[in-house]
Image 1: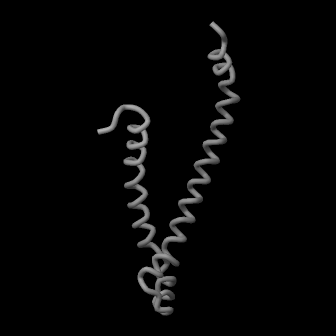
Image 2 (image 1 turned 60 degrees about the vertical axis):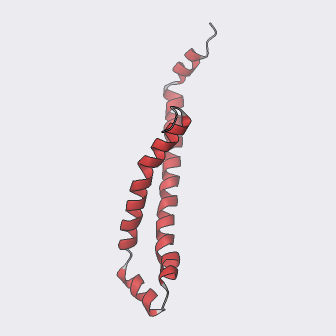
Image 3 (image 1 turned 90 degrees about the vertical axis):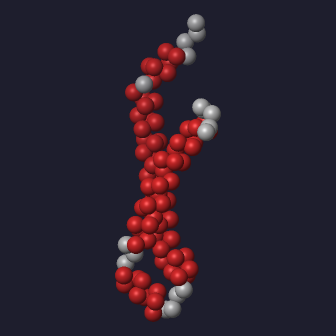
Length: 96
């Protein structure tokens, strides 16, 4: 379907992450606090307003938090790699 290379890598990553993301989003939407849902009904919010004001902010805040944690862990592991494998990088850059 895709050539071997960057396109295939991106397609594999997308295919591997889209389904867990969608399934966890559905599960998160189902587990919204019942008190908050009752409050939304009491204020007569429409379904779209409940989705936009109640469900999505919880989902996006979690997604942003996970993204920041992933970036932080990647930076930490990259720093550890630079320190522990400094000899290896230097060996690759030797002429000849």
